[in-house]
Image (cartoon, rainbow, N blue to C red; front, side, top):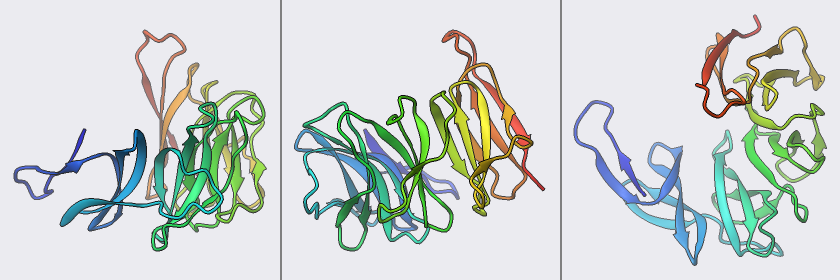
Length: 238
């Protein structure tokens, strides 16, 4: 595929480069996915000079042969969290973090035949939330950006399908395959039953938290694959 830029003020779109999954690093720079050496690699692309430059350049003792994806920019824009699937174990995916400046990567998670996915930075940049199947279900886990303090947060016995931080960092919203949205207080790391709710009988497939603390929108699909997806809106805490 290709990445295009469209002016907000109107005008024709501009084809930028052959790549996919664009994520803004700043107003002039994108993190993109490109195909290299029969693998997906993360790259940095300047919109004024869009020749992609390899993002991860120093692996240290980490396996370097595999697929890089799901790039998420840290709040201070100094680091990128991403997933890495080693070619040597296709039943495995790890969470890694790379410095934008040095290109040096470090592992936050990783175990043989275990998939970890969907990293999301906390608003203060002190934690990364991700889902891991290490317990037998995709449960929500937390880890520091240096790999310290890893722990499992949820024990819902239902796969985590989506998670989202409140913009002020005080809540973490977790959507599950059972259709429930679980809300966690990030001070005590306990679930708040009075703020959690049953969104649907099918899996929660997306969650969007208002930047103005107005509410939380979720998209949930029925277990029946032929049924229509439904949307839900819930007012956030006061």
